[in-house]
Length: 171
Image (tube, rainbow, N blue to C red):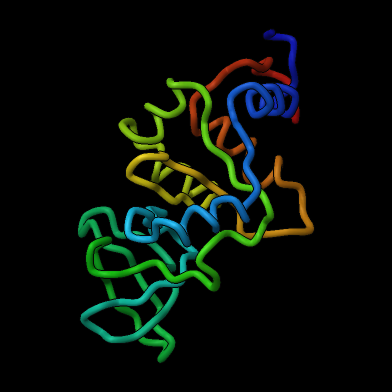
């Protein structure tokens, strides 16, 4: 398997470890049982957010490690700083715009997502993640008209720490 390019390895991982489900099915499940669904996407640079104590919205433009706070440019152009629990990520729609959502079929990927920092890494790779108490986690993409592998799946494959590809091979 080590003779694969990075893209081939990412494609193999996605085809063997990720199950797709139409977004309309998730929507129907949410309508049936709304109180047990929640968006768990982490705030990341570029996220639109509502800052509770400011009563204003803005965009995360950085992260200050020593403060453990996000740097946010509010709509008023002022800069403020807030911890993750002091803001809420805002989305245009309740579900990702792409017509498919996915879940991990491999228990190791599920463990990585839930217990090993995968939630933040997936958020950084541009995935929105929703969770249900019984059904587990489903993730999707708010985007269209570009290469999902280049923008989302390959960065996720790398964030996951997989090395099914030749190290010295281009994408």
